[in-house]
Image 1 (cartoon, rainbow, N blue to C red):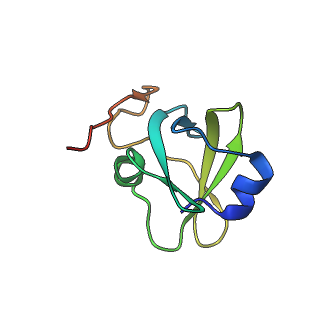
Image 2 (tube, one colour):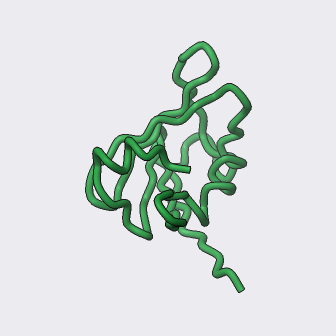
Length: 103
């Protein structure tokens, strides 16, 4: 769930967003609303797996435009995690535009 304070401060989150990591990987994700709550829907699981997110790590979001957000991953000591996503080599900037339609 996206924190309510984030939504309140930055306003409504569009249903399609682009998330960019500190290494330049761009990910398209969708969001959905359930009542007063907003969730990142499609794209988040693939992002978490590709960037090998672990329990104790956290991700910060910075709004760049109405639909673009930059993210930084930190470990449990608040140290920035800099890693290429698992989909690409060390010298490749990636763009992941995979969305799967729910049936």
